[in-house]
Image 1 (cartoon, helix red, strand yellow):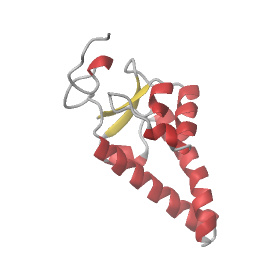
Image 2 (cartoon, helix red, strand yellow; image 1 turned 180 degrees about the vertical axis):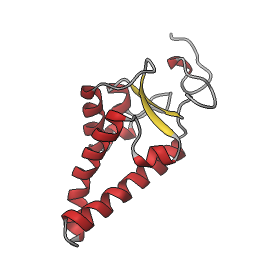
Image 3 (cartoon, rainbow, N blue to C red; image 1 turned 60 degrees about the horizontal axis):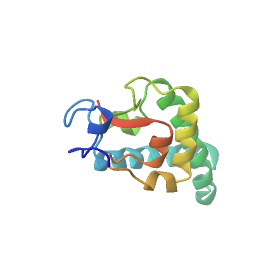
Amino acid sequence: MGADFGYRGERLGLPQEGPGSVAPLGRRFGALFIDWAVCMVIAYGLLARGDQQAAGNWALGVFLVMSLLTVGTVGSTPGKRLLGLRVIAEDGGRLGVVRVVLRSVLLLLVVPALVWDRDSRGLHDRLARAVQVRI
């Protein structure tokens, strides 16, 4: 049997509270909502030419590109940045390109993001060896 850990992120060597601690679920969902809204506005206004049904499809592509560019460079999507969150590697460093691509594609599939471990990390973060933390 493994050791019993007391708080989310302890197994990863993260602090219990404050900067560097595991991001709370509410903030993560809020950031996702903001990011999706931004993607829908871009898709609706620039790509779908006012077609609501097409906008949803375009928004997936916009979300993927936004995630790849922002998480891959600064570690935060616009929504995550606004809510004080960042995506880092388990070792505390930056995610490499391959891991950002893996994480982003799995996030688009939705289901991996709904399967969590005891540190509240979605399967997309576990497989990419990433963790969302407070800034």
